[in-house]
Amino acid sequence: MTSECRACRTGLEHCHGAVVHHVYRRSECTEGGCLISDGEHTVHLDCNAVGCACDARMSDSMDPVSARRVG
Ligand SMILES: [Zn+2]
Ligand SMILES: [Zn+2]
Ligand SMILES: [Zn+2]
Image (cartoon, rainbow, N blue to C red):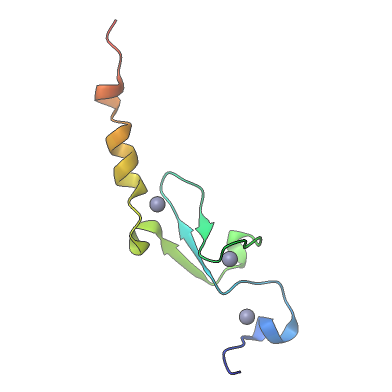
């Protein structure tokens, strides 16, 4: 296997997944069940790069103008 990275060989806790940074949600890893911190990852993505549009969705549903109550 040539796909093993240095951390794999040395047994370090690490992850080959990518941390997806959301605008309005917690960042999450593409590897399900990943428990290591964001900073331990080597790959970081903005969520819109993976087809997530949480910023657009949230700004639509939380429109400050339409959400404002009258009276
Ligand atoms: Zn590895
Ligand atoms: Zn991970
Ligand atoms: Zn997102």
